[in-house]
Amino acid sequence: MESLYIGTYTDRQSEGIYGVTGDPETGRWSSPALLAKTLSPTYMCWNTDRRVLYAISEEPSEIASQARGKVMSYRRDPETGALTEQSSVTAPGLAFCHLAVDSQSRYLFAVSYREASIQSYRLRPDGSIGDLVCHTVHYGKGVNPERQENAHVHSVWFSPDETRLCICDLGLDRLYWYSVDWSTGRFLYENSLAFPGASGPRHLVFHPNGHFAYVVAELSCQIFALAYTQEGFQILQCLELLDEADPDSTAAAVRITGDGRFVYASTRGQDVLTAFRCGEDGYLTRIAQYPARTAHPRDFQLIHGDAYILCAGRDSDSLAVFQRKADGGLQYEHSIAGLSMPVCILPF
Image (cartoon, rainbow, N blue to C red; front, side, top):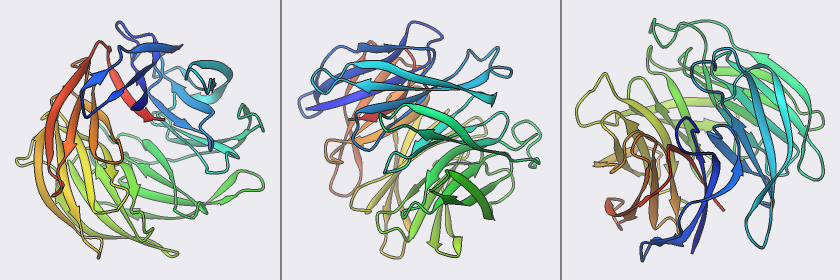
């Protein structure tokens, strides 16, 4: 059985964070149950023991350009899986788009796309969110006048040893890394890696061996294989996500299997998932692209021991389940309906 927490946009029928439980092998899933009523929880993560769930809350699009960022913590009932709001903080700046908590649950890091800021918050022993301890902002612009008129920090990740914060800035076509002082939660700029102009790096995943990383570029619909060392990052390879270029498509999420053999990425517009085989040298070999069977696949997750992929369709109000084949290919199995605008999947 799989227990999944689903974040949604609450612009239409959804009311917050939902839970579904089921078996991807049989296709039997519970009806989505509302676990926490909150405004557009569009990205979520767990603390170390998975007793506390953290979620950002986004204002409706028409006022998001002026709304302050908000992140909340919820206690999870170990028996029922129900969520109870525990704490919330409002940022000094604009709305958040991504967050991460370190493996020892010391600090929460959140980033804002609109103001290109990175912030760290102290976590209390019970997992609740404490004071803001560090705040920095990126400045500048890229070559795409519509999407890169300013810096746009899109995601925050930890290096494998958690000595660094890795930041994808879509607006500046750069991957930044900061050193972290875990005694204070403060972070200090080290260096950055430039990507091709107008590519728009969005999300990142590290290889399990810690020597490679993979970045999806939202604007160019490409995936980059990177080498990673204590000196930083180096681009090894760039591959296309789509069979045919499409200016109306944008890349979204990237995931890697636990054994490090396969990498997957989603693209909105053409609404596809693309599969890659990962070599021992970190280079990728493109396998194929597959219809996502959902509209606007903003997020997806590997589930059930990486045997399946669950893909969230924001505009189709559904989740699509795929079985992974031995060669890394995908086979569509079934869909889960009854959930409005799902955009984030968090396995328990």
